[in-house]
Structure formats: structure tokens, C-alpha cells
Amino acid sequence: MIAVLCAGAALAVVTFLFRAAGPMVVGRFELSPRARRTVDLCAMALLAGVMATAAVADGRELAGFARFAGVAVAGLLAWRRAPLPLVILAAGATAAVLRLGGID
Image 1 (tube, helix red, strand yellow):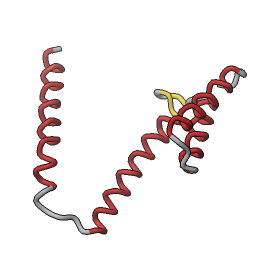
Image 2: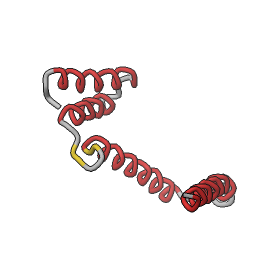
Image 3: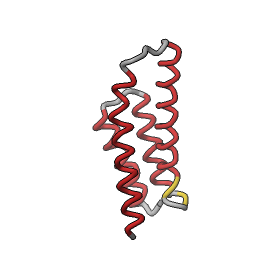
Image 4: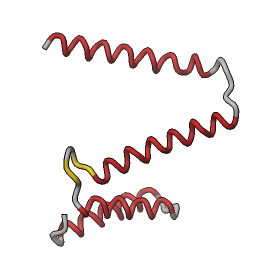
């Protein structure tokens, strides 16, 4: 148990050092517009991958249709640039109505 706690503490320290070093390193050089665009696209791709995984998986099993439908409604409304509270409420309402109707 002590080994796990020490490993967790070491990981926390290393993570803190990486985060603290970031602003110091970024200020030392300038990225080209192409490199900056690539970094932005990679961040969006990573976020989309996490969102897609969370939308279709629940642990080691596939999530139900209600969750997928809620995420689809949220994605459609976000794409149409709807206000964030509307996106959240519509996604939750979609999943709730489907679950209430017996569709999980």
C-alpha cells in the first residue's frame, strides 16, 4: 500500500513540475502559424475522441441508446451554435424522455 501511495505522490509532483514548466518554455520560442494550427487541431481531435468514447461506452460496456441520442442532440445544437444552457437541457431532456419511455 505504501508503494502505491509513494507512486501517486511522485506522479503528482512530476505532473506539477510539467505544468509549472509549460509557461516558462512556451515564452522562449514562437510557433509558426502552421504549427499553431496543427496544435489547435490536435487538441480538438483529442477532445472529440474523449467525447466519442464517453458517449458510446460505459466502463467496459456500450452505453444505451438514450445516452447516444442525448449526445447527438447536444452535438447538433452545438453545431448550430445554440446557447450552452439550451444544449445541456436539450441533451438531458432527450436522454430522460427516452429512458422514461423504456429505451435505455
